[in-house]
Length: 313
Image 1 (cartoon, rainbow, N blue to C red):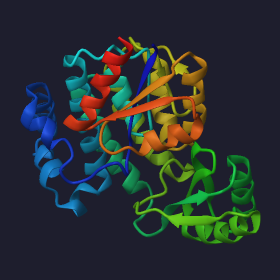
Image 2: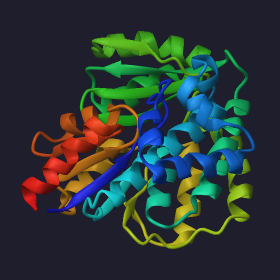
Image 3: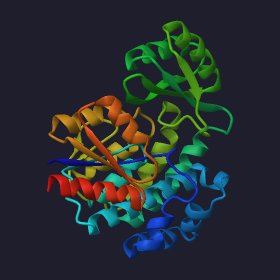
Image 4: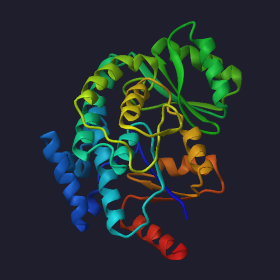
């Protein structure tokens, strides 16, 4: 049995996430305590009580999702679930994967993603850019439609999530032009996303440059468990590779479908999504019908994973 742990990114957050584990598992409570101390404010209260508008602010969402995911991870460790053979995370979830791999300390990671959220929001003025999910077209078709629309503004395919689901990002003019070219290409649906900036587009390059300076002041070790990076859809092996990949990831596409295929081709047939919601679980099922997919975000989902361990153990 080869298990891969995957960690969610932005859009997985919800008010109340992590509260059940916090109340029932001391190891989870300790993670929230460390986050509050590292950031200098009560992130745990924001996760448990909201308000939703504040939790959804990028600079808060990123450390919140990371913290809940690491709390779930610590509970999994103490529940005697077998250690994963490989790891991956979607966008900010890559930081969580690197914490799980022993590459970055949790405290450094939570501070880094807090800054990352600020930098990404600052890169493009509010209301001047955005993102949309494109349904029913291949990544190649979406990329070509964006190329045609780019005569009118900046527009790029930025999240290659699974067959038939690609996310685009760009400035307002680019997004408007892309609606036309994508419909002409046969897109079934184009859904604007409730985000405040065009994440993972080239417009985010200033944010990547700022994050690079912060990463220079942080100890990043070689991963102890193999991690597939979003930027390359391949394993990163050294601390230097990790730093470079995290910087490039900010302003380059998240190659999620390829990342999961890399994990599958490396022998991983069971996936456990560790963290809030089940966004990645749905994507993985669309990428491979043979993969067995589970998630852990509360006691009920933890029980299902423990039953799996007993079944195969």
